[in-house]
Image (cartoon, rainbow over all chains, first blue to last red; front, side, top):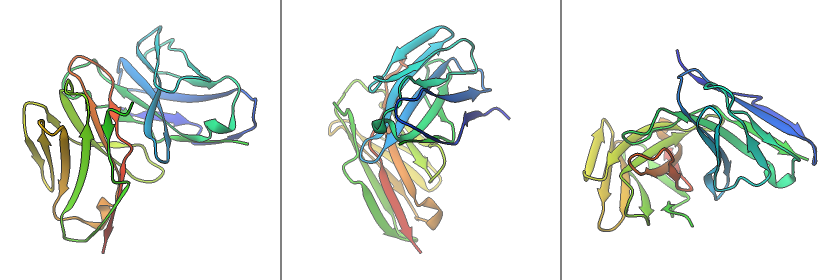
Length: 114
Length: 112
């Protein structure tokens, strides 16, 4: 069955370190998204991609970067982790726009920055 | 600026009764509205959607109502079951665009 996976599921790191969170989908979806979920803020969009070599900034992109070298993967990199980036991160994917634009979410990565 | 708002952070309902979750939006250009359900330690999963040209969509125990003049939608769950206890996110999108705009979520607790 097609799916979307994230790794690691849990990560503890120190302030200033570079961290990369992986996202892999097997639906062959063009669109991929990264969100963070924080209490009182819901799901906030960090970065998104509409296809290979395409990346775009979302609502809360400062301190994060993404690259899209193939259809299946959109890794999220925290260049220099900060305590404010402690959060739960969700990756999502969707096919080309049409209809309600339903997105399919991964299980999430809980990141703690000490 | 939050374009989709869920003003109730939590809701408790007795098992068997109706749960009503509310959502407001500010952008009249939205074409679709979606509800997602999220259990702890899992990603959100799609529940039900409605097009802006409709005022009601029903799927089993779940019904979404849309009031475009009030820029308001609601999700009704009847009857509520303990397994419905989760965080519910409202989201909106525009036709031809790829992004979803999410609300802040409402935590529903169904009491047995």
